[in-house]
Image (tube, rainbow, N blue to C red; front, side):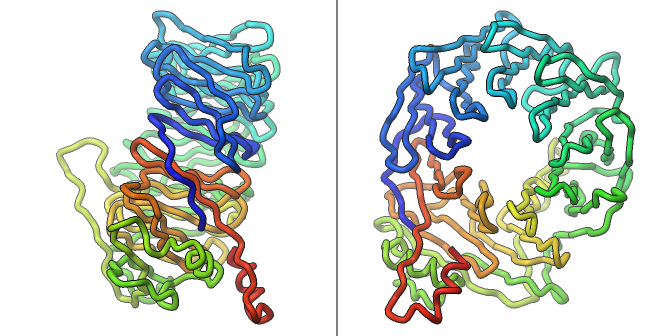
Length: 470
């Protein structure tokens, strides 16, 4: 892998949807950099510190949330002198987001009094009263034509369907929940999933016209749903809950056809590869890494196996079953217990998904949906802070607020030591092309890229393996 030098940041950083630009917040300044060279291509000054960034879907505009004011400022990349300021006055702004057409901004006021749709074309605005949530509870169809917004009035939950062209309400239907936690359109726009708060396990599937297609409840008298995620193809719906299990529903009957548990002791018949992070105080022997040859060659060429100056070096060791993974007992006297499936995400091809059970914060579980089995387990030394799939292939990266980057593919796993002094990764993001990886420290960031391996003297018997892994 190749790494850039570290650059300053004091807030959010995000790639543009077209993967060409990187937006970085540095106090009140918005810095736009080229992804390839990281040179500054635009510099904007906001009226206060930037708390939130989001690119418009067409990558032409970017909004900055200045929640201390509270205010939203939007900027144009093609017209640097153009700017837009949105101020809700005494109502305040709790969250802001772009509409799919990149010409409207949706803001939610403090205390969820109203959601306002602001037009950048004719300065018109539309209000939706009593949105249920600030950052959650709004979902757009994949084609960008409709929006589903959670609302609540008279102690009852509703879903409002709006046209993203005219922003007129196309329909409203009540939802059979005690406290609606969120909604999400299916990838094919044929259904809407809604789920209840953690106090009751309830998942409901609705058609766009408001008909309830299916109600699902795995159990009663316990904390309920924690995470929900559609597979990219829309055929499967994964539901993670506080009972430390993931249940998979199919899109034909909406019945559960698979259930994956997260036991503290992994035994047979699990055939998964178990990778455990261990210290490696000596020069790494690349033959010991559980890693594809293409990655090995890149790390050797770039010298990343030695890590930062004076820093420790780590590697993955392959463990045999049975093995007991670290687990914590959640506090019974505190709200929002650290228990259950807190992280869940599908790979871009829909073949795999990963989970993290919050009372096992150092363990990442990778599941194979085609074989309905556990594919791999990554046991880290420190709690997992973030994990992300490569948008172009089943390659997973994760971080643990350490000077190491961890990577998994179906071919194996590896630890990459960051060649930057005092750099600890707290968050990471891919760009949409999968060509660049953003790594964030507390007050700086760098970018990383996986370089294609050059063929050696006898490439015939290694070409297939290298190309598959890269």
